[in-house]
Length: 268
View: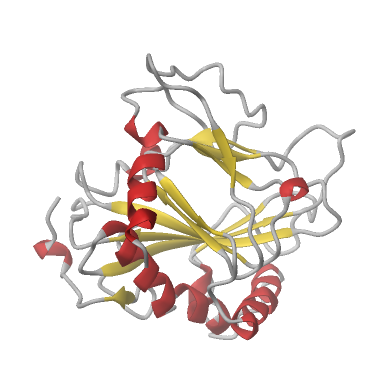
């Protein structure tokens, strides 16, 4: 990988691989696995973690299922891909990459005439991860597209450089207004949005402090993806962690690059 990729990640707080980096067959199998998990079919015999979404739920709502790799071998094959580990290590300079949480996200089509209910408000992931990790832990996200993501699909958007802003404001994943007025932009900085457009099998990486969100899917089909949360050796979970509690189970949370660093040995 060219060194400018790492520089851009450090400068912008994200990096987008618009072209597929995963094999088509792997992606197609994961798409099929996604639909089966949504329907409550688990080929591993194990259910995902408890989620607000339940099989048989409203098909027009945002589907968000926690730890779907527990339930689907095809999804496990994607989230455990060494290719994702290689890219993550190249962007961060890490010696080890391990996934610690995964979310299945399916955003159905909607129209401009209905009230928004599948938007994802501007937020920083770290807001939700504070109860799980010691301050300064190197944790971040790779978002993998399982369907083509074009401008009308409600793509995730990043605010460039926002990971460097000190105390810009809160944010809410569930906010449907996509309102940026509540955030404080530092002097000398500007609010610049970048849409993560990519083909199925493409992916984007973003820093734990990067502001991001997405609007409605106005295309004809669902926008399907996996949000895979990663850690490096420069991380240490809190004793009473909720979402990092599976990192000692490499069947659920495999190391996808380098050699494992035990949780108690991690540094922050």
